[in-house]
Image (cartoon, rainbow, N blue to C red):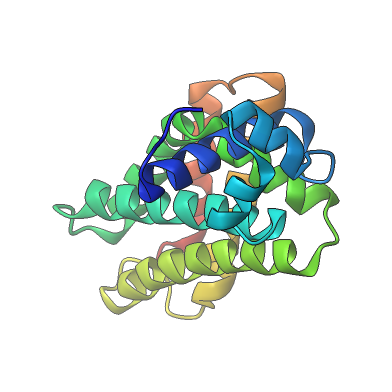
Length: 194
């Protein structure tokens, strides 16, 4: 067993658990399997994470943070509200590809888990996305780019549902046609426009 400092060991355990959860599912993956794949004992794993749930929470929160950072960086120099949304959505295929294991974990748990802590962190993830897109839609409404008679939360969920659908198809069946993806983005934006 290679000795790592605590932050490196924690990151290693997250990476190993992400791969195993993506391959076998959260419910089917044991802490013993995670520890073995990481080359450590279960007591070492439990020094860093009190439970499998805590490890899952760390995976989703890390993915959420990476997502928000990438989206903020993508739009930092863009002022047009519609273009901000377009750029984020156009980048989603590459983002999902880069974090494919983490998205397999998230969507697998979304589809199958009944664990309350797991569901809570999945809900937290989607709340962040709702808040992010809701803010962009609100800014677009204030700027007169988007209709004022709409609910930003509902508009945000159009993007979330399209993103979940895209991710599920892309991760499990292969990439979608780029033109169809772009047309879907434009269709949603047309529905928002003033």
